[in-house]
Image 1 (cartoon, rainbow, N blue to C red):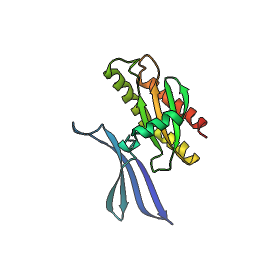
Image 2: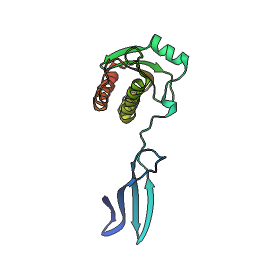
Image 3: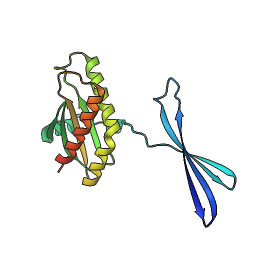
Image 4: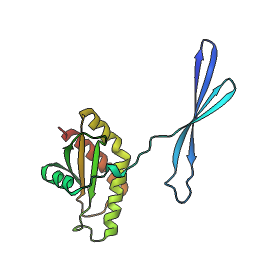
Length: 178
């Protein structure tokens, strides 16, 4: 909990209390998240305002869909190798979404759909948690991209290794963008 005082001369005008509360979900909700609550004390009156933290989501609009777009990405795109990922990108027309992503895991290396889906889930989660840094890079450069992420390793890596490698991949991608 942090307290901020706003002073005018010797008189304290108001207090701001920032508290983080844990929201417990029921069995149908998404996992637990923390919500920042602003409590303002002014002349012995408490005014409570809920300030929700920015959500890190992977929305449907962020997925690259459509046969034409994906075909263009693989034909005209540039590729870089950052083990265990092969990342292809192409500069996209200006849009409100800076990155659109398609993730693939080859059936040749992982025969069972369960394994492919688990790896895709881990890559999506790594992307979701670390996309802010990619967004910042693209904002500096001033354009949007379409991104294809292919998993090229023949063995399944643990999640913490995938996340570490994904962060490295974002750095390489930032250096290779024109």
